[in-house]
Amino acid sequence: MTLYPAVGFFFTVRVVGSAANLQSQTGADGSFQEVSGLEAQRDVESVKVGGVNDYTLQLPGVTKSPNLVLRRGYVSAASFLSEWAAQTVGSDLSQPILTQGLDVQLLGPDQSPLAVWRFSGAWPVRWVTGPLDAMKNEVLTEVLEFAYATVKRAPQGGAQSMVGQVSALIG
Image (cartoon, rainbow, N blue to C red; front, side):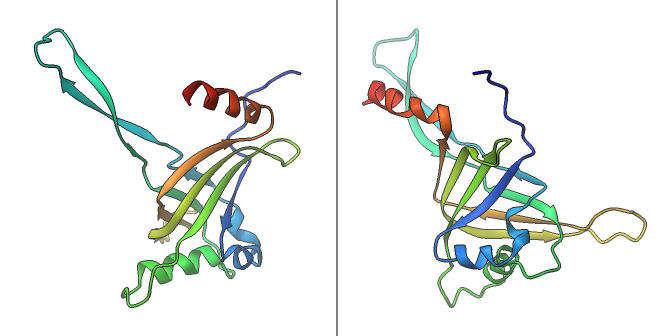
């Protein structure tokens, strides 16, 4: 089997949760020009050891992640994601904020997922449309930004077979 690096332009975004059916009713909500924020980083805490002056212990700290940012051409049709963002960001907080899971799926040539990044407890924190500029001949874009509780990378296919072996080494 010949392995090639995955292409970064064949992906989709899916809502996972009570609103998944609403997203599936709008065909444009899975397609985006760009997805960023697929990142997690663990802070490192340096601790001085009493009586030892030639090094400090490096201990694991909190895991941090940036917001998930989705960019696409402006959708003038019905869009669950756009409406969810507009209602959440513009909310007076008299009602609870709707949180959902979001899956970013990297797709292979046969449209099967090669990797999935699972964002749990996601909710919109920002939406941007524009700019509107009569002097430019460009597609109008919109940006949807989401905060979330956790992100997990879930390898698929052949990469998935290593999950158990790595977990056994750790545990």
